[in-house]
Every structure is written in structure tokens, then in C-alpha cells.
Length: 205
Length: 164
View (cartoon, helix red, strand yellow):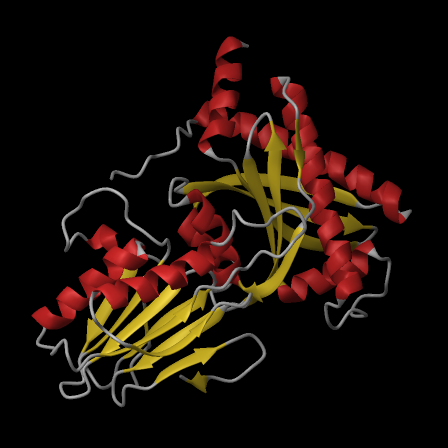
């Protein structure tokens, strides 16, 4: 069985970049409203990376990380995973909850739920941007937050895509509050159907 | 000392070099399947991703290692080809966790469980006994197979390696 290659061309990548960038900026605005202090997101960068290369980017498959996972339901099906190295995730919790740097030393249910909410917002705003562009309706499932080895977190995606997606869209962005900044990686993993909708839409524009 | 040999997703590695350590890092729903011939010390580790290969394929096609059922058959065939005696083989399996626990995400994500069931049924079909298991749950595992003394260890986050 030959593995299907995603039809990623330059044009589509640009389109995905702009949707993601728009979505993540909206998410920051939404999050600021929720936590009551201004959180900005700067320099969203989108690149295509091989799915199997992600573990290396995050520091090896055995490294501890936080995975925030949402499925997309509605007119299209898909999934979004946000992966943050463990240490960074605690910095992010401090930033989101307006705590002095270094306050968070472990991830309890409160911290996990804050991270889940962040993933939820990023996902929801990303989907809103996408929905506006293609004129379809979809919503994210509640977030699942995992704290485990990167390899094990990635298995969730690998097992569900079954190797169909050889490449995923990697988003990197800085979450900032005043002088503080935390870099987070944000993966968007569209399945073939998502892309088909986008491609069809793009061709008719 | 040599660096451990990483057995990546959908790969198998077979070795008889006592200095080798075969490692499958961060198994989530994936299955690590180890076979050791205690006489020749020939050791093999498989890192399979999905339960079953559905369409026909060549038994020795490297792509078969992606699936638990065909991966086990390929590992067995490779071990025998390299001189292992099938009746002596010690089989141990680890992995098959269900990583996602969240409301609304039930059922469709039981790939871990299906991987475990497929591993057990495949060995049953092949008339082979699984000597030890560390499977299921919702936690990632790193599996190491030490060729020198056939030890198989499992490590989870925040804990030391444990022998299986």
C-alpha cells in the first residue's frame, strides 16, 4: 500500500499559514479577555515538518512534555495537537495565571486545566478562522491534556492518521505578557479531508 | 560503550552483539515486541504502530513492521533466518496504552487495546507463548532490550527502569 502524500503545495501552505496566524492571534485576544490581563502572541511561524521529526524538535521521544489534543467535529473532521516541553508548560502557566516566573513547579489539575483551556482557545479560534474562510461549520471537542513522553503523545496522532499525513504543519509562536515571553509550539494536523475542502475553496476563489 | 540502537516507529532491529541495547522510546499506543533466543542470544525488538495489516503483502516487506500482526511475523521470520530456534524464543510485550482520556473521546481511540489484543492473538495463532507483558493503562513507556543478558526493561516518566 503506497502511503498517500498530502497535496501540500506552496499556495496551500501559504493559505494554511495565514489561517493559523489569524487563528492564533484571535486566541491570544480571547485568552486575554478570560484571564484579565493582556497576552500577546508574536511572530507566528508556520513550517511543514515530517510527523516523525517532531520528537526530535521537542528534544527526543523520551522527553516529558504536555500534549493538548482536540478533535474537530462538524462539516469536517480533523485533529489539533499542541505540544509543549514540560518546563515550558510551567512557564506558560505562570504567564497565563499572572504568577511570578518560577512559581509553578508541577502540573496539578488546576495547571492542566489552564493549559487545556489555552489549547481549547487556540483550537477554537483557529477553527473559527478556518470556518469563515471556507464557509463551513465545525467545532472542537473538549481538550484532552496529557503529560507524558513526547513519543507516547505523538502516538495519538500517528495512530489516528495511520501514516497518511507524512507532514504536519508546525506553528511556533511566542506568548508574551509585558517583558515576559514563552515560546510554544503549536501543531495543526489537518487530515486529507480538511485539505480537500481548502484546496477546492482555494481553487474557486 | 556503544550508543543504544533506537528502534523507530514501524521498525524492527535484530542483533547478536552483546554490546547492543535496543530501545523503543516513548511507546504510547504502539507495541514493543521482543523476541530472544536464550541459546544464541539473538535478540529482536519490534516497534509496531497499528493493529492489523489489511491487504495482502510480501511477508518480508519492511512496511509490514508498522502493524502488530505482520510485524510479529516479520520479526519471527528474521529471527529464524538469523539462526534462532522458534521453540526457544522468549517473547515479551510492552505498550498498548490508551493515551487519551477525555470526555467525548471514547471508543474510537482504543488503538492501544486493539494492539494488545492483536499481539496476543497473533502469538496464539503462531502457537507461541507470551512470557511477560507490561501493557495497557494510559502511560507512555520506554522499552530497552539488553542483548548481553536478554534483560527487558520498561521505564515510565518519573520512575527508574523496571525489569519485565
